[in-house]
Length: 408
Image (cartoon, rainbow, N blue to C red; front, side, top):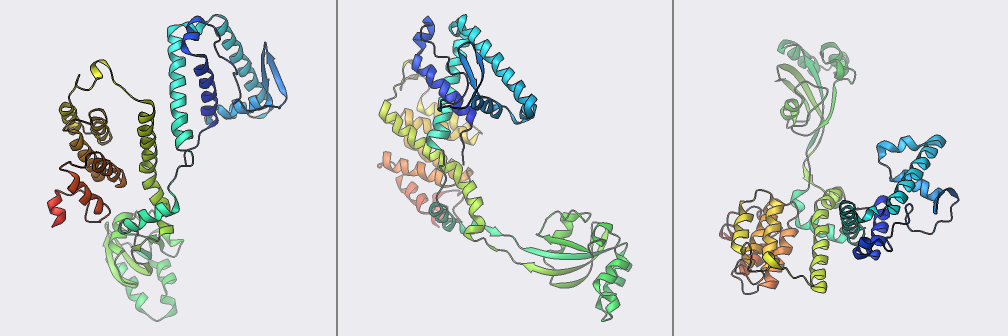
């Protein structure tokens, strides 16, 4: 879940004050909003701990100031002496700000540019993280639907519980194996392991190497990954000696769990992680689409449709771009900025296929195809787009070479 931290709220509050004053006022110096310097605009009834001219600093301000610091610096402000040091820093900052205001440094072009940039970045980030994405996660119903469409992708790998006796050579391994076939209690596993194993790490565990999947690195055994591959498919029980990485082992598989499909609850965290980027991206894109319609967007000068780069040139640039997300962005830009172009539907179709082939969540590409069908119902790509949507979660439908190959 995306969480807006307190520093962001503080910056957002300051940015709001700047926005209210306006750039024209900044140029003249009239009404420049530079207060409050601390806090988060919430009602503060905590005790005042310092006054700097007309600026007051409260207990709550001090706590928030310390909380705003990077984790690596928070320790510097712990304890009574640390709090006093933090308060001293706040006083110094207040004095610096008051001096800057007295000298009207906000009218300096470099300073003004920084103030404007910080206002823009803060409010943009606030809208994305707080206005749109706060608490925005897929519901259980949405995740379950995703799970059912992709159930073949979620597996619990097969596991084997193994113990071993690592021997100095094949002769010793053969001798250990023969003793294990005996019915004599003195030839039980614990005794034979103690007599023959040369692995001091697993000897303390009576040879127990733990649970492992095929290819797992077994940390207590040299050539551990090779060992797990060699023993993964052995039957339950003691197997004849085998050589792994130049060492001879007598292995007993004591338990086995076979590969199976994960339940929804087992796969839930993975599903959420896969869905979240596309889910939140859709929220942002939907908002931007509505905001464009509400406020209106018109490009001027060399960015006017028909000026500058043509849709065909942008399309070619996109297809040569190796950055997948940038390619998708350029293709989507063609459809948004040149909706009447004969390349607009091509761009949407290619953007959708690029997303489906390269992103974890196929629904990102699916939404682009839905836009294509809605915006260009007469497009030659509508039939193919509809077919892809129908087969979007078909396990065989990933990175196809052609529509015809899928239909066959």
